[in-house]
Image 1 (spheres, rainbow, N blue to C red):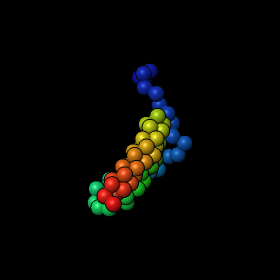
Image 2 (cartoon, one colour; image 1 turned 90 degrees about the vertical axis):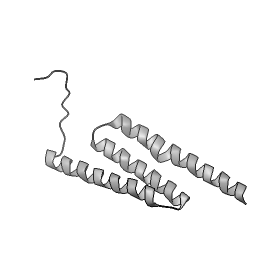
Image 3 (cartoon, one colour; image 1 turned 180 degrees about the horizontal axis):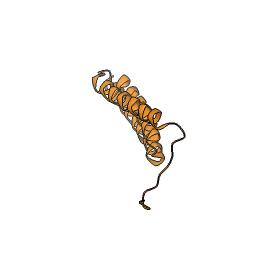
Length: 95
């Protein structure tokens, strides 16, 4: 037995956890595709924020709470906020 590895038992059956992880991976792929295909800048930023939350849930299902918190902070809140402020400033200068 390897003493360096930490085994964290799931509270749900392994098959169900695998199904959840696969479902979240498929949703993440669909979310990334949606971010790329949306052409309206504001809608694209909102979808990017949704994608960030989806990735955070995926990281949580993969038992990475530190990455989850980082993704929530940066990917779901800070980056979309900066992009929305930038879009507002650019639109203000255009008028």
